[in-house]
Length: 269
Length: 306
Image (cartoon, rainbow over all chains, first blue to last red):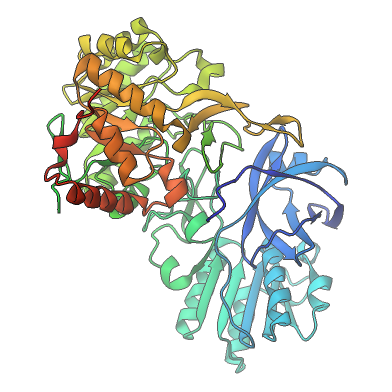
């Protein structure tokens, strides 16, 4: 029978790794049994609870990489190693791929974390992986060393301002790779929705399967509150996704255009 | 195939299942998706006159037996209902829609009811029974005979549409409350809202799980309370009732109808059986009717031999 207990599990923050000024990785020792692309809800006791994608899970420990973006994450950043938080999940559907396939992974901004999770798993399954890592500038590039440390991976870096790697967007790097003759079975991505939208168009033009991790405002994580229901199908991203196929996403009237807040009000990108 | 059609206050429902207020239903697309998944009708999340923030997370969790929530009635306000939710839902309306409204002052209920009436919902449901906003607004109106009747009167004055009142189980005599609402012009009821509020403690962190500390209890555990309340209201008033509370299967739905419910509200069912659970419940109701020689579902309403 399905496990219906979605109460938070109190876990100790075993280690905090500072990725940059605004980004920390939180290490927990627990067998989460997650798939790459899934997410958890992390409860910062007395503050709030927010969704975070899983950056790493080896069955013994898992990592959550968090960017300080608002009041809840600002409070999280005050916690020290040894503090306890509540974890619910994993929730959602992950990325689908098979042994030995050729993957283009695109991580934009803090969207890189879950793509690292995919890369790690994919390489252990004998996949050939091209990883396109992008950020606005070199100080915001995350996981550069961790990714380049993965055996046999091809890492391509881009920054909007050209301070490191290719000057421009991840989408251009992908187009250049394809134009240069690279063949992919899948394009997987996590990052700003606009970036994902353009990746979808590129994938479609080139006849490549494209799976994108979608970020929407969430409360429950299990398809009840309706906060992440998307216009078009009305389905909940936390259940149908967060990883969804471009073929589905392109039919959703809101994808790449707007998102909703905690009250359900629209905000255009 | 049994006939599962229901006439509720003159509104025709394709089957007795209705999405309860507060689950899904943030947008028109979400409501349509619920109908696509088999619901005979839908209820909006509670609509406020103006934007209402709701509580911080955690706002809900479930266990095998019960579910708890304290969302705190988050809503973008009437403007969103007027400009987005209703116009989008009403285009080729897939099933009847019940507008659930909420306010914390009598006068505001009146203003909101008048505005909602113009959006042309099939039914107006008045939420006077949410247990999750007591810190903000005090005891719900549904917990007092005088207050429950007072709200009914104010809303009744503003609309000719079918008007139902959503009742609280957290009272000593739900029948008396229902009678008082009926005497002020309520056409029917939705019974029940969540039970409690209850308190769940995380023993490792030694603090309440919900950010609001307390929250309404729903899910399978509350079904016997809901069935009893529905029967009490049915006996007291004889008016149509949307029986809501812990209904998760077709057999549960039949049971609450036998207690007197004409329609069956489901919210937490989505947690246990996903949104497609509506289709499954309807199928199970049909199977039960066929196995028991029930040709028309209306036959069983209130049929329990007490």
